Length: 194
Image (cartoon, rainbow, N blue to C red; front, side, top):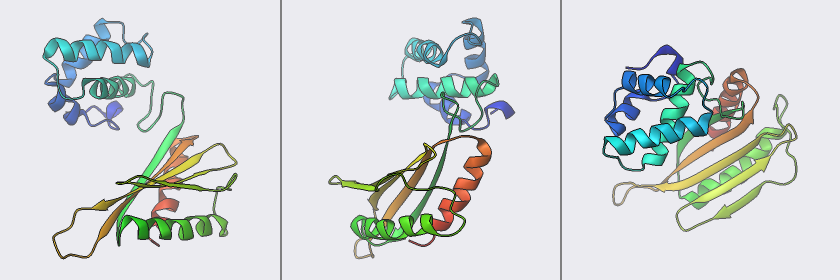
C-alpha cells in the first residue's frame, strides 16, 4: 500500500522485492534518524536491512529505491525529483521498423520538432548518435542546461512478423514538476511522428 507522499515510488514493487512491508521500512528508517540522513545514508541503512532480511536480487538498486521512496514519504523529494532538485521527464513508444530505421527517423524528426514555433528548447551544439550491438542512442544538450537521451532497441516479435523498435526518451535536469508535464506533452507529440 503506498502513501500519498510516496506516490511516485512503486511501493508495492519495493515491498515485494525486499520482503519488508512499507510500514516496517518507514519505522526502520525513522528509528535510524532517517529524517536527518542524506540520500546516501538512507540507502546504506536500506541496504543493510535488505541484507539482514536475507537479500534479494540487485540489493543496491532496491536500496536506492527505498531511499527515494522514503524521501518522498517525508516530503523531502517530490515524485520524479532527483536528489539535486531537478526532475526528469520520460516517454516511450513502440514504432514499426528496426532500431536502425527508428534511429534514422529520430535523427530526422527530433531536430525538426525543436525548430518549430513553440518548442521550448534550443539545441546547444550538435546532437550525437552512437550504437552498440543491441542499442542505438541519440543525445542532445540544450542551452537551458537540460538534455535529452533517446535509447532504441529492437522489440521481440513473433517469427515472420514485421520488426518493431522500442524508443525511450528521457529529458533530464528539468527545473520543476510543471516543466515535466510540459516536456512529456511535447515529447509524446514528437514520438508520435516517428
